[in-house]
Amino acid sequence: MDRSGKVLRSTLFLDQVGEVVVTLDPDGLSWKPLDRGSVASSCLCMKRHSKIETEVNFSNVYAVEFIDRGLIHDSHWNCGRFLLGSTSEMYRFVVHGFHKPKTCCSPWVLSEYTFGHEDLQKCQMWVEDINAYMKDGAGRPKSLLVFVHPLCGKGKGNKTWEMVAPIFSRAKVQTEVKVTKRAGHAFDIISSLSDGELCSFDGIVAVGGDGLFNEVLNGLLSSRHKGPYPPAPTEFGYSVNDEKNQMFGNNSNNNGRAYCNDENGLSPETSSQSDDHEPLLSNSESNGVGIPKFTNKCGPCNTDQNPVISFPNDWFRLGIIPAGSTDAIVISTTGMRDPVTSALHIVLGKSMSLDIAQVVRWKTSPSSMDLPYVRYAASFAGYGFYGDVIKESEKYRWMGPVRYDFAGTKVFLEHRSYEAEIAFLETENFDPLTGITDTGGNKTQSSRLSGQNSNKVICRMNCTVCNQTKNSAQFPSNRAITSPNIHSENSRWLQSKGRFISVGAAIISCRNERAPDGLVADAHLADGFLHLILVKDCPRPYYLWHLMQLTRSGLNPLNFDFVEHHKTPAFTFASSHDGSVWNLDGEILQACQVSVQVCRGLINFFASGPEV
Image 1: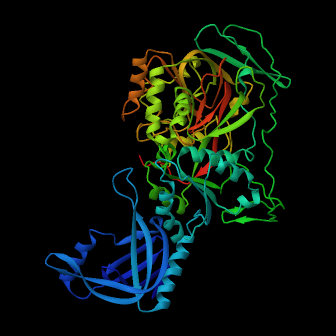
Image 2: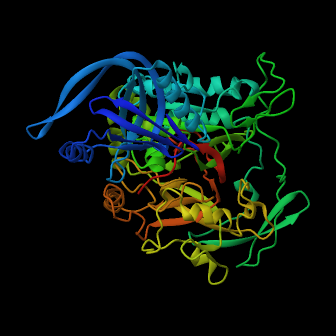
Image 3: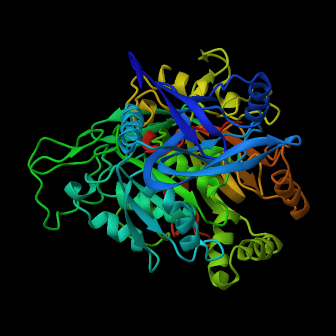
């Protein structure tokens, strides 16, 4: 073996090709057939290898393993095609990789390269050297907690995990698998884990749909996310006689928050609510595991006797292997709905930040006296039509995914609307294409996004919008969790009141197979904003027209007079009834008063962004 710096070279046998010269360097492996002095043979080999890979980069390799002695097949050219020739028994090792098809958003395809040699030590040395290079790639997980929903989708959760489990075993990723037995099972397990136990994992993976991921997310954050609540609807003290948007200014008064109507010159009104909300839940108690200092591969969890995990952090990641009914989170983050592709993202340690919506329920019903209750959503929060559909679909779980079509049709025909008051935080008009923040002009009108906006920028891998937003004036710190304007004395809130068929908040685009562009095509994964979509009461054919726009790519479901679209980091919702429910990533929340705010980059997700 010739060693030149970090470059290794040796003659090995490649299964179904023959004897090759293999080169190993920091970028990956490459090989070419051994020159036997025959020009014709060399040309034929070039023709052969023009159709297959002659190299593989370490970015496309997820495992290498020694597989002991076995047969290696040679090949030869005959009558215009390659045929298997002689076979030899020798020691072997396999390089496990994958191909990315040239067509965008196509599933990654697994590949294997089996090399052999008569010398056992040489094979073992190659395995060690390749593994050494692969370890240089930062972020690959070593241990994961996996939750499998056996009944998700069409009952394919277990089969999906069985299909991708070999990828994790080949990559030497230890997995502790929990098969959920009831609703809330994953939440209960995660919320009961001590921080010391959680530190033994590099992340948590949900094999299922968006609902299971929502359980995992809430179990993780319920006692570990610390931060102020968004303003409660009662803190505004507004009274509106029409549906026209009105503007509010924010002035502090002792420990309360006062809001005045600048347009009408109303006097400030102080609320008894304090800015400093006490946490809803205390830290989960340790269940007996004492770890003085637990070190994760990405860094120490803590140096104290009792490790404490808080979010956001730089090492703990969440992931999804899609097996659900819609899988909007996976499609929005990877561009495709493929279990193998998602598994490869996870074992390779791909990582990106995701915005999470914190939803605070202040009242379950108009007459109830409730303590604040916190939930989190990764993709969507919706009331009215979207809440009614998910509530109705629970009656028909035996139907499988088709229950959503049945429930949706039934709710659509009922055509209900709900009286509500919504207040949302106005933001500066930040242009992601130019990086310019517009602080002038009519703010009331600029808050409503034009349905014909031609400057839409689709979120993708290495997204410039998400990166620019981190450095914008509205988010001065890369680790800022919520928009500083939410609790600022200079924050300005707009209000909309009336009857709504649906109130929706899209944290991400929410792409799925039924809605190829999602609810909001240009929603971003980590820009610190959600898209508030208010669909006012309208005739049933108009609402059908709006829904049909979602089903085809390139159309705009928001370009209607009865649809308001606002980009905001926070909003509040209040209703005088409890006729509908909230839909949080497919999970039900009963509430008539809620506040929602975006926690920017709160979690790290096993993905690299869509390739569209």
